Length: 404
Image (cartoon, rainbow, N blue to C red):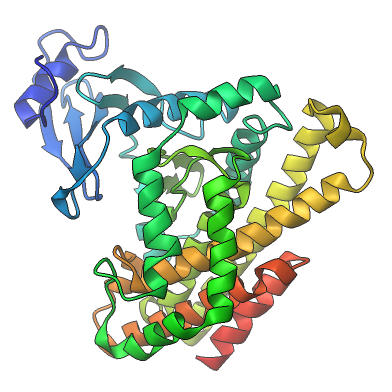
């Protein structure tokens, strides 16, 4: 295959057929380009006769959602591939297996998860995932602890930071999450019905202070190797299985950012369910499930991260100083709450919305969901530095819901 170019479906078939020992010799392979994200081509390669299949993901040199006017480095494909391989070592079975990475084509070939459903769509459909909090807390605790200064030799960690410098995709986060929603920006996508709420975001100087502090941490605090985009659209799930995908935004940043992303997307679904579930009792019950999942995700993460620290901690002074662990974990909780709020706000007024709310066909119902999400998001941002427990964040959620 020649130097980099976007693959055609026939070229993808040829590459898949060349993977030694995967498909039967002479298999009649079928290919569909199924990418519905913003940055990549995704090919689904199948062999009907053997039932075998795989996924091929190729990075594009620009943001597909905007076009060639927004160029991006292809190195993110290397970052994604190396992240998946590392995550599978640290949290086995919770990410797709990588079969091959082709640096020239910016192409990662990996396990097909077609027997799973994108979790965002599953939640919209009212599906519950009883293993999710357990699995995602394990994924985050293991991948974040063992790539931090607490669980990794500090000099080795510094070298790893260099390997995961990801300026193009960090720039997307820095602008779309921590800047654009709080000013007039061409990147924003604000429905006229909530322009007053968007204007309030631009005028709330106390909110801007909290966002500026959270942004500062995102820019400067290389705590651990993040997934970097850990939303429910980056999780394939069944009620029995959880698989985290798409770590192309991976870089060394503040641990709370990943935790906050998970919480935010559960709460975006919480806001949208006012339309998707019509029966009031069923709605209250499902929202209760989502709140419990938020609580369990933090609580289980906290327990598992501390257990890893107590058993595998490599830093003497962090391990032996009374009170340090408690202070560290309390700061992670505060960060997670703040980042959850930022992620929620961005998904309502920023460039890329979420299907949980954006696909609500009734304009009045959609506006109610947007306003509820914005109230939860801004309240979490205001709370973050004052928070001492996850229950305070849950009180914010329930208080906002009662008003809407």
